[in-house]
Length: 89
Image (cartoon, rainbow, N blue to C red):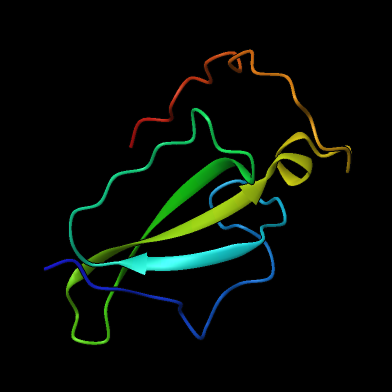
């Protein structure tokens, strides 16, 4: 069973990208994210964490179109963003 809740200890900015975000959720099970036709959110960043019981989980930070572009203007551009190379650890 997938458990999700809103963390009480949310940071002011997204720890994955440093941008403002509208909402956050913590997931301790499997889940799917589809932003292809999402009118509200442009991007979701993921940050590893643990539950209160110490189980692995992901915090998801939901960015609106204006927050993701950084210009404060909602965009109707459906063109995909250029890929960003992932850092390797």
